[in-house]
Image (cartoon, rainbow, N blue to C red; front, side, top):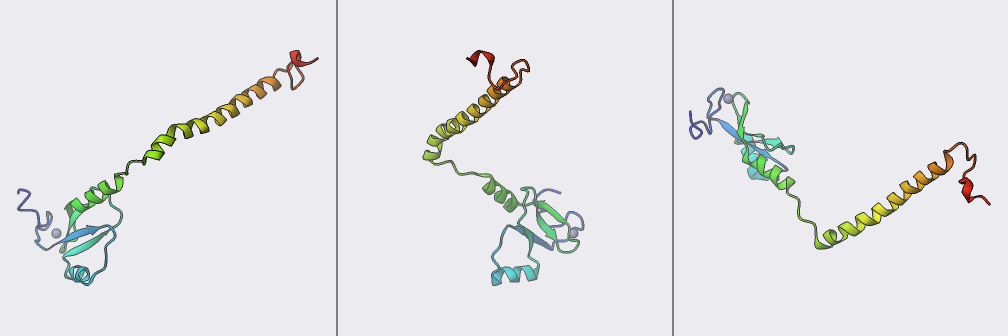
Length: 131
Ligand SMILES: [Zn+2]
């Protein structure tokens, strides 16, 4: 059994009555409704994994075969457009602007802890700072 001969027959029951599974958001046109009623297509829903079956057996309801539409939908969704130039130019300055206050905050927290913690000082300030 090669790929071409079993393309439209069910691998379980061998039935030639196969419906194509359509994924994604579909437009309900009269043509589509006629195809649905005739059992030529079946709606697979919007959740695609890229490895979804492409055919549904009308006799035993087995879903089988790889759906190129499912793979295309996942590939299209995973392609992110490149950032515009101003985003790329602003990326590092914005990072630095965010990084500097965070660093200052943690450093000041460390200094405060260092000032408060030693018990012999009994004061918020180190001894050498006193008059
Ligand atoms: Zn079947």
